[in-house]
Image 1 (cartoon, rainbow, N blue to C red):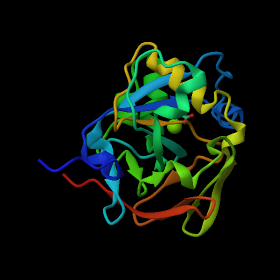
Image 2: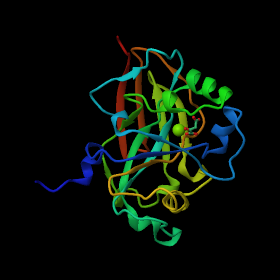
Image 3: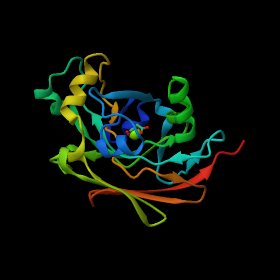
Length: 220
Ligand SMILES: O=C([O-])CC(=O)C(=O)O
Ligand SMILES: [Mg+2]
């Protein structure tokens, strides 16, 4: 069998662990409290979608939101990883969208139910190419941006994160063992908004990487 290549991590079928409310300005825009501990949820690997394929609005949603996020690709697994060595476990990064059926999430929140239907559906995790670690020497200080039909909607900086990347790796790995090929989505800055069928989304990490996706509706 050919050796697996981390630059195609999305083919490995590994976990996608998402951090929510990690930017105070986004927590505020959705009227959520600023968390004192990371808020975590999961997406399955079937959520991945790559450039060239469309993001699909689920049939049961009429308010699909974009959330641009820095993704951290794990290169070396571990359990209870100390913060001091956490960055040694990082192979690289990917630009990610945490597509969210906001209407469904609001309903789940009001009923105290899990967010799975709002966050984990097919195409809910559009990703860029793999970005080797060396290309982002300071992942705690890079700008993330997203445009819908050429209009800037999100423009944040990872320096605004409440919980840093080493802290998140250490915190998560205490109770979920991290494996090579796992992806951590580190949360979104403010500016989330609804997308419609035929919209064009473009996003970037500064000019280090850019990506572009079309939105379509899921057909029965
Ligand atoms: O707003 C949410 O749904 C929580 C979240 O994923 C984020 O803050 O990135
Ligand atoms: Mg998110």
